[in-house]
Image 1 (tube, chains in turn red, yellow):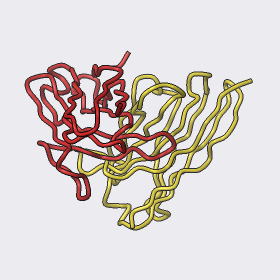
Image 2 (tube, rainbow over the protein chains, first blue to last red):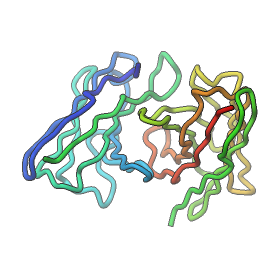
Image 3 (cartoon, chains in turn purple, red):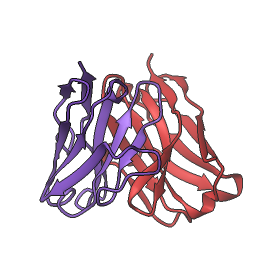
Length: 110
Length: 118
């Protein structure tokens, strides 16, 4: 069981906006920044969002992140077929003295 | 270009040991802290360990404490993970990842597969 809770699956049609939630606690999301990664099978995970909704160079602005209290979310607008992947949230946990991940959300583009 | 290349994975029997390596290039390795993360078959990403740039600060996930040891050799631009007392549930793809400050992993390797089975 992951420390951060994500829905196991999400879906949308091309052009739609989808959001993926990530729920934690005061010791992780509540007190530290949340990062989001995209992971395709057989590939290295790719950083999408870090710090306060920052995107690395090359990540389109269709991807955005937000945080409120002990929850965070990733929004993907203008959904494209290449967005079909697994998405993970992660944060440092002050109580565990370690980094924790969500269980991952498999996004399907219908 | 930043590159992280893991090696050392393979098939090992339960109770056995394995040493993973991560060769870094394209950046000043000694400036960055590093991590190991794994993904078991059909499961999500799982953080294993963190080591600071000078090796002065090290953290482990509870499930590997006492069994795995992280280390680095800045002169060789290399990160290591010594894994002892391996269990079936340690079967996974193991990734090394560079961390920016204490914030986020910005570069990952392609991973190396470790299979623990008799």
